[in-house]
Length: 272
Image (tube, rainbow, N blue to C red):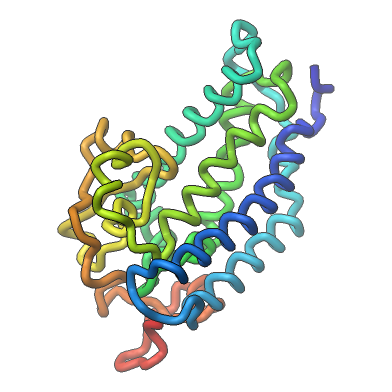
């Protein structure tokens, strides 16, 4: 049992595992995209650099404000004493966090105030495995706090195996890198894996430029949530264009994105 007010070590170790997994998944996604590209282009481009700089800045912000401290409140509104098997704990944690992320992501698109910040992520006109790092600090803080809310406030997980929650976070990190990758997804795999694990073809439709007509594919690791809740908008081929429509576009630089600065009229700094 964790001491009152203490920070759960499983969530601290989860931060370390999350970072290591992100680096490995990023390398894998970029490597696959280089070998079998969906859009023939350099492995890294200007957007990629902005994404990486944004991700580094947000991670620095997390360290600066000691974000792991939000897990210190061990409220545990719901008991999980009946879930004693570590493998079952890990599976349950994975399903819960993926489910929570689906609804948070859906809210980012359906709640105007949240979309105001989330559109930073959708300002990309080209996709690769660095795309998941492009987000506004408001989005980043919400996603960072979410595991603590689920596993520290909602559920009493103090008796769980120390590795269960960190391991449960790994599939989502891998999915984030894979689903954004510039990988030509084999058509024969789509009907077989369509709702098993997120893939570049399924998620590419989440970034379609005309999102007002095609808004969906919110899932992180399990696209089945989109099927269950009616938000599957994927098609057999990836969309022709990504990003925001010109009148809603944002300045394509690290600071401009965080300040939600509109793109200049006739600006040439957009795109790969």
